Length: 161
Image (cartoon, rainbow, N blue to C red; front, side):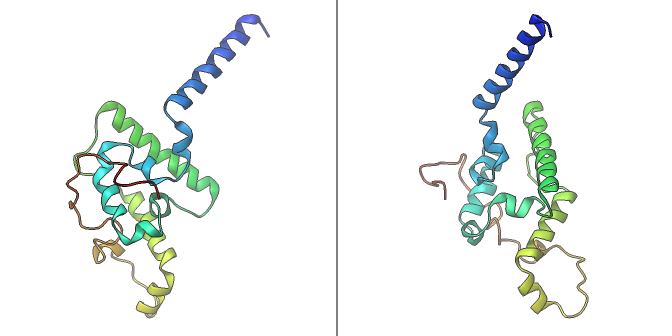
């Protein structure tokens, strides 16, 4: 291997290392809700979740990512992260944040997984899941829609749980 190749590899590793450090990239591999709310467009969702009953039991990733296995979990986390990063970098951020169809299916599956005993006692026979859980339980995970008046997440008011 030539000296130039070694220098190029060292520079690439140092650049990627600095990028990971400067952007706190490791945090995005975790499941802290504060990381999910790092983008100001998620402030209302974060604040509403923080004041809801789910904040004691579930984090963003518990509802919004699949849990069938490690590979599927991180593949979807990467897909959603790449989509969010693209929107942030290009400035193409929707004014109203809404889950896409794939995310709705994941959330529905996770609602049923966590609340299987409740679902089993309510549903008799073969369940017809022609509606999403949140169509009736609208304010459960994120509280009242649009209830947030905060322009930003104030970590002194909302410390990490």
